Length: 290
Length: 290
DNA sequence: CATCCACTGAAAATTTCTTTTCATGACAGT
DNA sequence: ACTGTCATGAAAAGAAATTTTCAGTGGATG
Picture: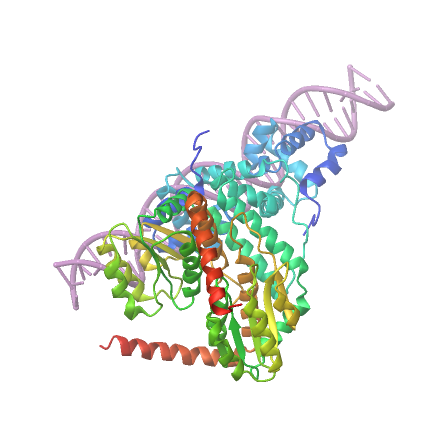
């Protein structure tokens, strides 16, 4: 074992910040359909990524490999580690025809997004976020944009049941300052900001940071500018065979977080849910007496 | 396409009889830890097998490949196919999310839900619903419950951009009668109602039916009572390793519907989106003059 | 507006890989 | 023992791949 724990994918991610435009483009190409996309010759992958071969050499050296052959050797090791599972051997896709119906095309895309997102996602990040959200001393604030507002609302609705001190920011940005005013140091602002990034999100994040709030961002693979201000950011794949982006995988992570938080504070949550149940009953009685 | 569907492994096996000593030795070496052992250069695999490079060339040509690069290209394809296999995919996740990490368990559950839902779902139903929603003469009304309200909102937000005459019902059921009052025959009421079915939904659906509205229901596999009144119902699998139900697959169908509708009325939609774009710009100017 | 600097790819230089050629040796049949 | 056939690998030739060099580009800075 030479490299042991760190995968090439990890190395690429940890260097994303110091990569140049052409190099980022190459990195994207490599991570897309990773690790198979890195199997060919340097010429092939340069062509696939639409960059020159010198760019490839420069990047892999920047990543810490001796040269392209060294880089590829590591990749081969990883492929080996992935494939050596006996069940996976020789087994191939059952249905050859992906089908052209929109449902099938969507299913393909979402599976890809999910896979890619999970490959990129660090479980430590996930666990840290879950821990932060579980801390009842911290207030939670949720905010989303025009499209992502529904996701923020979904997240909020669940967290509201699980724990106290949760707030959903109106999608109308003019009311945000009032919310910021109420934030205390250690509170958490959860931002949903995808593609068409909304400029106001950065202002909001900046203001919240000044108040000492921690920021968690759900964004796409290209990254909202607000992500730079965030303690943790989830970069989710959102591509769909559609004019619109897909929020399915984002919702997936939200749901997993809900469960993680709920699970870590189950005893308290159970009590809350029982009480809530009682309140619903009472409300019903109010409405429909008899 | 020289070898087409047969795997390289198959080809080697079927040729074992006509291979010479050195070639058999090479074949053994290749099949051992297949297909990873064939990933390197001809020099590497020759060394590993303890034979000369000409032997490698001669064998792969005997197997029917044009040369070593051709042979290796086929091998790469197979590696790719193997890695794209769902089980192998899962193992890749497992690398990043070891053991029974919640992300893994969720991913498993969601894939199962998606598969099951697509199996149960009739594409004809989907297409019918898409056609109904594309009909601009029909008004659309969206409504959801406490949890599913966010899904209704998400659906509504998109459809509002795509076509006119869309309405989101407040989650407060006391205001519903007013909406029903406005419904015309042929209008469509889209109801989200899962588990803990809300009694009011049935009343709403009944009232809407009386006004001549068509009803479409998103529910779970057990079926909302409102589904009985519906023209079409989507029964989605919602099971998750959580105290909560999963809305991921429901959102998946919603997104697929959005695309289907958008696609069937693209010309008109394009115009609407352009206009909307302009309106957003104007709003920005209002907000931040200068 | 000039200057600098980092990025990038074309092309040359270098290295490595792939294929072909050819000499050697083993072996079977005569 | 002779001869022809085949298998095999060393080495040369040819083809690609990899790396290096270098000049052009564009954006940042004073």
